[in-house]
Length: 461
View: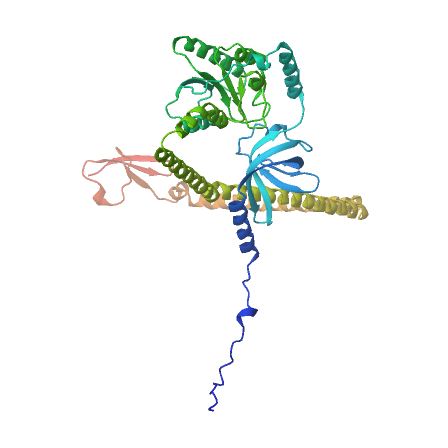
């Protein structure tokens, strides 16, 4: 059997496939981890205790939250609207909402905070409990006083802010579940000084409206927030306005974990604004479910497509948020804060080094006895002063002699001295022009000749 020929340059497979591997740089690995965290987890709610709180001059807040065994680094940028920023302190229990990401320069995962909610029992909480006990004693929370919600409401009143997310959520659910439902909207503030008065007046206005065009029920709602943000719904004025309403009132304030006085007084409490809309549209939804199978399947397919598009929109929005230049700018701002801290530490170190050098020089100055040096320098200064005075005196004498010599020369070259030697100067008697040649005069022209000691007048012949 013939032997297979082989070239002398054929070395075979130097690096077998099973021995090679994909090697990443640190930056590539960190970027991959960051992408996975943002895609898989993204925006989250986290609760814990604040520790290592640090406020930068740029307005950014750096801190960590911890539980019994773990810590999470967090950053709250200066441009983020967070009313609770000034109340944050070490040891404070908080609930945070934000985007989980990786700070690439340190390879450390962190939470970019968007919302801050404080926890704990404080002065407002004590006030809340006191009012709750008072109204409960008066019977405002009794089940017998609560009115039954209509099963198929056709017209409802809504008291809320026009700019709040709660109204958008309610309208979204109503459009999806019962588009035919009529809404009478009363705009009011839902936060801040005097908001409870506006809401109470809105309830009274809807009761007057119902006398002309009956309303089936009323919704009082707003989105989530801290205890301070929701405090308008804990005021006694608003609680009594809800209790005295002839129209059944549904309260949907905050998140599912938030409870207000309005929730206890209202005829029905919903966990969220969207849940409230689902409750009073439940009858219409149940009625729609009894329609023909074809309509039911069509509705289900439309809802599924709508939810898919919403999910798709949420995914694209989240991807757009990750690519937004604000995220890169925030990382650069965080890097600037770190460089600011490094610069501060370097300046402090330089100051200490300069202080030590100054102290060394002071000690050396004491060792060389500056009084002797000053005495020698003073004697040297006296000598130099004397030499300078002598030099000035000689220069002045020489300058005086030069002035006398130049004055003599000037006198010898002056016109008076020339005239004294027998010379004369002839001028035109009228204009004073010097006559330099016979061509400069004409017959009958008056002349004046200047000689030593006077002048001679003449006429050209």
